[in-house]
Length: 283
Length: 290
Picture 1: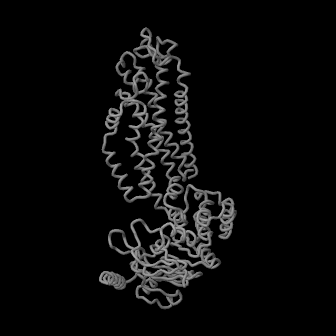
Picture 2 (picture 1 turned 30 degrees about the vertical axis):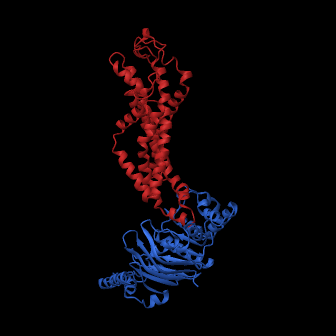
Picture 3 (picture 1 turned 120 degrees about the horizontal axis):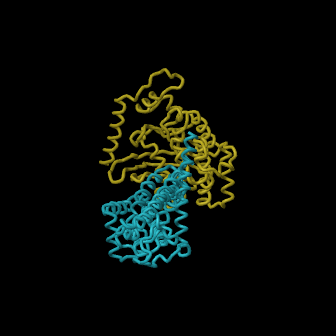
């Protein structure tokens, strides 16, 4: 028993370190991009087009990760693209969590008509294909960082609402809630003081997953050219451009793809690691 | 005048017309222990929940009077009612594992009521919490106050719940099967603790249980329920000598005996169950036509 517990902890620890490490590194790079990027991410140099990355024969030491077909530095574009990815992950993730969790808490704790309304909205929302819904929303609002964030919040709040509602319902049935009410605590205060702290770990885990999803959604939208204006580099936009020259310069596609993959994976692993950490039985 | 006086309390399932409590009346004096017994679904817990205002969402009070300290709780506006209950009544819940909030320390879970309802300052409330824990023989109360529930054993948590119930010096306590979820060895201690505390504080205690053995140990009066209806109300001694209702007699006969474990268990006979069901149905007819 004790042995198994410590094994779980150690695995969770490694997971937290690796995923957290990558995310810190990537977020730091995004934050510092304007200062650490070796080149202007938009500067074209047609004579230096499709230079391979440093480990391939014929690489130019000035361009670590090579250049794309217009001669723009892939590393600089990657760093600047990370800014968009992390801005979206953070803002959209948090906003989605706040909206979804609030509705889920109200529905799960108050039940009755509040629950009816929220649950029917969830049902309706879940019937929309999310990517098409996002494209539709962006088409209506016009492209831009704000539009993307709003679209993600509008589409994904149900992820939080559903889970948090179920959790709040379960917590609401516990004896400690009855005890608190006998002791004179009002309904809303019960929700905030008694229920919310017990649902918070779930919300945090969902939040990390949502951040990964937000990064993916942003990349998808960039890929179909619906994200931000084309003079702002994004990972999805880089992948879209790389696709057209995949036979001549595969790195233009692969480098942002790897960054995207590692980031999304790290977010989900961070969530898993935190879940183990929060689990009161394992704690 | 009894401290708690319930008259003709009727609780129904919302929107169905089904009745969970069918006109229950009972009285408990200060310093008195009243046992509520009956099989599952008899409505014994429902009475306690109706008094404390924690009926499940699907249930509602349809009629009757719940008088505590001479004041009809059902006639009070919800806010005032919650305040009265918070100041004068308390609950000892069934399951110590879910009755403490896992994400809060013990101290605020005891002191909340003292601060919010009685308006004490924090230091005084904390002193009182420490005293209460000491009173239920918890060693090192200061450490326990800083603990989270998962750091404490089940028996310890039940002691904390008892201390917490008595901390505000309530005049009425509802104990809802407080020993059912515990180990048999711990059960006995907890039972004695509840009885001692009740006697010392001169509290009116409503003790919900399905265990007649427990009733014999701790209660003075008892109410036998079936289908939300009171079948018999009597003092405990005469009940065990001569139960007044055929169903109570059958219930008593069905109780396993500690002094004679070899004796076979007698289930409540079918004809008794049918008779008591008919009684409940007759009461429903009366109510519908009257």
